[in-house]
Length: 291
Image (cartoon, rainbow, N blue to C red):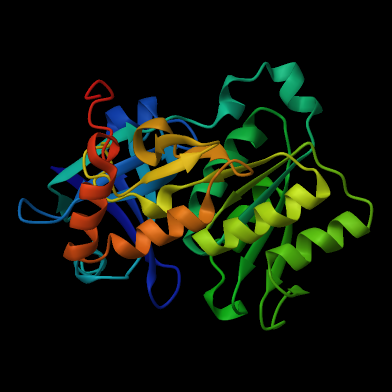
């Protein structure tokens, strides 16, 4: 069992938890994710890692209540336990594999939307610990649902934007990025993590601005092991699975219309059966050796 050490409501429907999971805390890297279950009857929920403390043995997660299972998670208190807390899964950010000298020369801009702020924080904190302070654009619909502002400001050069103009730059993350570009900011890479539609439009803008862009396709994961087929997507004309091949990919190669259409179809049983029949042997990734 995995004991909850801390619970904090970040907004009306977004929660932060610190969970005692020493093996994961010791081995986690930015960009990776977890699978959690409330109890033995619960559904598997993939969640990106927000932070980890190897010394304390804790892993931090941030989640939004969007369905019955995440609502059940939100009812848990300090001292309660998860039945399953499995990870780290997926491939870490390729920034972790770069030579430090090369990394410190790069001009990076992260774009965080909604609960995508959590995995962005993990990468920004890791970079800060390597002596790299990146720019970050954090977007929200309005000021009242903005999360982790102080934490984000402590590890980055933070620019806030809100769709309704209630705080920071007036407009969405693309408006903010264009504004920074017009002011003379130039980046070697943009890393965007958030809702699918946000990442799509960020990639359209960065392609125009000729800025290489990485996106995290964690919003389309369900099973988290490549077996269910939910996170199948096309990247550069090749079949990939976000949970075993990613979750991070070259955003300019991701077929966003196809990924968004599949995500909508996968929500119904009829849609899942259609996708399984249409995609055949490429419908799921399994252990990586199934095909």
